[in-house]
Every structure is written in C-alpha cells, then in structure tokens.
Image (cartoon, rainbow, N blue to C red):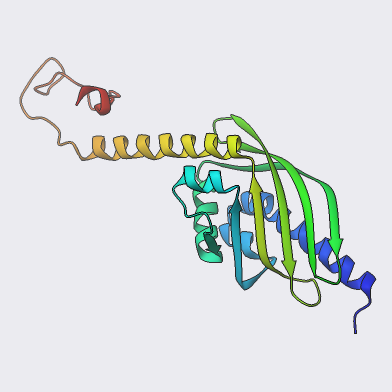
Length: 193
C-alpha cells in the first residue's frame, strides 16, 4: 500500500507532467503528448459557462481525449504554449483531487504573444499517477483572442486555397495572359471577388 506522501508525490508529478505536456507537445510537434498524464476515459470540462456559450459549446460539454488532442493539433499549427508557471497548488489526498492555477503564454509563429491564466481542478486514479477528469476554468479574454486568430487563419487558408484553384487565364496581355497578371502576383480574392 502506498503511503500518503507517495501518493502526494505522484499527484504533484502527474500535474507537472500534464501541464508541461503543452510545452513538450509543442517542442516535439506531437499532439499525442497532450494525453500522456490522463486515463483513456478522461474528460475535460471547460468553464466558465459563458465562455462555452460564446464558443457555441453546450454548458455541460465534456471533451474526450481525442477531441482535445484534435484541438491541440489545431493550436500547434498556429504556435504553442511557453513559460508555464504554477501557483496555489492544493492536494486533497482522501478525495484524490487537486487544484492549481497557472499562467502561460501562447506564442504564435509570427511572434505575437497572448498571455493566459487558468485555474485547474483534477481528479486522479487511486495511486495519483493518472488524471481521470479535468475541470479547466479558462481566461475568457485570452481564449476568445485565440479563437479570433484561429478563425482569421482558417479564413486566410480558405482564401489561399480558393486562389490556388483559380485557373490560369488564357490569351495575351502585358504579361502574357488576358488579365495582365503575373502568376507570382499576390491577389486577395476576398476583396476582388
């Protein structure tokens, strides 16, 4: 049987592994790392409810591991988490629960940084080596900024994909095509129609 101190040490190590998975996944460009400290049936709940509503998610929505990994994959395409700092760790050994607050930065590939704050509550398996439930109280302003940037990025990709599908005009103009546009010119089709 494990001692209380062993379980406490396991819980602290599991929390560290969970929180650093955001940075380690970024460093390795491997989204599967995000699930390394959780049980296969772990669920994640995002709060506050007002943020869920703003994101179009139901208030009591529980994310399974595969969905969370997909969202993390999407984040990695834009940047990643840096400088995670933990504060105010509280461990309840009897209930196999813990809570902690964090600050971190999401750095985009273009250099832009969004500071983020979270409060986390974790439920653990019996020996404290895996997390079975995550309740994440997110920084609503930071998350909404990230969502806006992700939507802008997705829109730009769609515009670029549509531009790539436009057939090359035929005929002759100043540059050898009917429109007089060189193939290397950048065109914003969203503005030009």
